[in-house]
Amino acid sequence: MKIPKRIEPLVEEGLVDSVICQLMSGKESMVYVVRCGSDIRCAKVYKEANKRNFRQSVSYTEGGLVRNGRRMHAIQRRSYFGWMTQKGAWQSTEVDTMSHLATVGVPTPKYHNFFEGVLLMELITDSNGDVAPRLNDLTLSAELARMYHDFLIRQIVRMLCHGVVHGDLSEYNVLIGNQGPVIIDFPQAIFAASNHNAQRILKRDVDNVTTYLSRFAPELAHTDYGSEIWSLYQRGKLHLEVNLTGNTEEKTKPVNVSSVLNAINAALKKEIAWQRYKQERWTSRQLQY
Image (cartoon, rainbow, N blue to C red):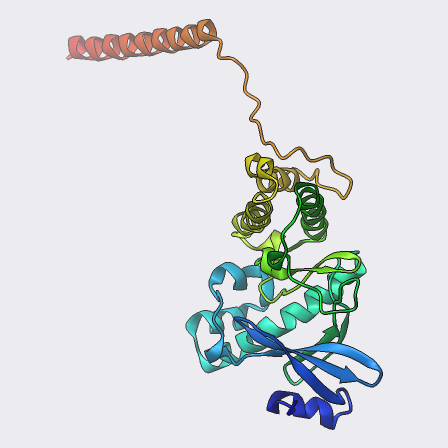
């Protein structure tokens, strides 16, 4: 096919030889299948800021994409400098996150290059060598749905153990490759430790995956892995081999009514004694006059 204008600089630099076809058009990018020498790869072309259609709220920019205070302030003021900063931040976040997660074992497409707003990465294929389908394109057995759910929950734990929350995880951002699920699309990733919305965002990621897979394995709808994972993370007890149950039962002790009444009575006696003391002092002063 004709080489898109945004990919022309990569052809000129010898990073891409030809464009085979357009693979998809998403809310923040367009993805092409390209030939790079003897390899077939993906080229993700990020859309311009005014053409993107995904959440760009402070929920994501806080503590995650831009660590510099001056730049964050500029983004919030919506100045030109802030616009340019945000434009680069969304792109670099995905590159940095993919590179980081690949080193800790999270299944993501292999990163190859990032040039002129275009991300070159591995093309994920299925067992037949065809482009891997997204999770939402598949009809699953209950057993396979449970397996995928367990795998993805473990990857969410692995990411959080290394400080990262995906931020937009769903059945649309998981490819089923020949080695199993592969997680894609990280422009909204955040650092959990420095984002006040991290708990809510992580729980939504978990709920998105669980809600979809519960269509095939209904019992998954009764789990709450998001709350459990975050609770363990907050208490410093989250690790890669943690035993998850999907439940967050609150441990409460029965109320000792007798103890409560005794405490109330003791407080009342002290208050009565204090009031009596104040009255006696006031009376004594009045008599002196």
